[in-house]
Length: 237
Ligand code: SAH
Picture 1 (cartoon, helix red, strand yellow):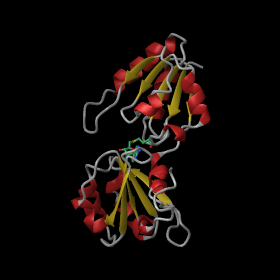
Picture 2 (tube, protein in one colour):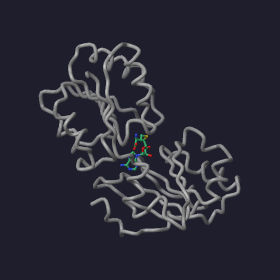
Picture 3 (tube, rainbow, N blue to C red):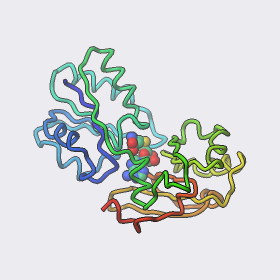
Picture 4 (tube, rainbow, N blue to C red):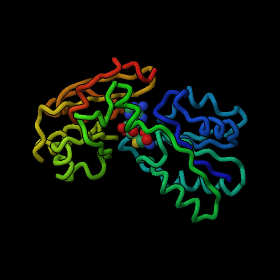
């Protein structure tokens, strides 16, 4: 194996999986995203070459350059770790990177991570599928099918909606859901920087979402469960 696509979890180093830690500890080259914090980077061997290829939301897309870097180092046979926030296959473009590696004939492996889609609600004491309040959960990116009227229908039918990358578009998302028939009084929780010292939880309603002050990265939870706090915000600690 030469290139490992590793999920780093939501932020806190103790939410890495053992496999992620062991892979990181033998890395010779690390290519990481913007959301990987200092606590996790401190676990990288000091002998490793480390590249920060983080993209800023709305900034230039350097995916081609990242792919090139992975192929270049993958060909050297060194142990390359492509470190991504959360789980590498949840809105992380991990699948695209693997396809490029496979196309170049480079060996690869994927190490799963704890996704912020579930860790962030949990940090706020929200069980995303709490029996009696929610019959399921839908995870969407605010750059995809959030405009689909079907989403409002699913939310109105009692499914929990978890939105990633939704900070900038939260006003439009709320408007589209309400237009699609969702009650503006539906509970919302916004969880910023889950599992890090900057973690912050705010609760409101869909009608209030556009006017909220939110700092990225944040996960937006919509549905009856968003009003719950079963652990007083301490479950992640
Ligand atoms: N693969 C990642 C998601 C990448 S998309 C995962 O599985 O978690 C980036 C988005 O993830 C951010 O815009 C934000 O919505 C969310 N996110 C990542 N880390 C977060 C954290 N610690 N707290 C809240 N949201 C987070």
